[in-house]
Image (cartoon, rainbow, N blue to C red; front, side, top):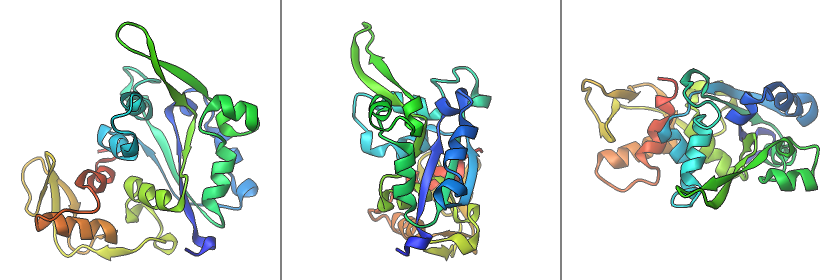
Length: 240
């Protein structure tokens, strides 16, 4: 990848929004401090599907359910769905992944305060997880922001949170392709014709991620796909 075009995903999480830290976070991530520019930005009401795909690597872990509640805003804005959102941002420029991980700091806020007190996550906290009996069984990192850890992770996450149409064409660094036909989604199934309640994923001529199109074609043929249907669909259900 051309280092000048490297991209990474940042999520300003519900706890940062709840504590009015958005401006502070954006100031630390500004072009002045990083040399990076915006390639895409959106305010997202995070669905359970999107949350589950974002944290897919943690499925089955003791803190998984709490992670979903955290990123969807259910923990910091209980009973207030109109406030349950994150800010998703694509930053582009030289060494984007490394630069933003350094500014974010260690995943654990306690370590962040000890090892890098000026970083963003130093303002976060660690929340205990308890079972039905009130016993502590784990912990959840309320660490204010997410920043992609590697270039492959950034590629997967950007395609999960953003459609090509959310990003200026001149700033596309991942392959795109025109959809040759209609694709719809309903109740966990991929359809090629419209049904009541179905969501349009792509129409002929729409620009989609090439990897998504390959997976859609594989699924349509009944083959195993490298990308899950939920991972493809999640971005199209954002804010619907």
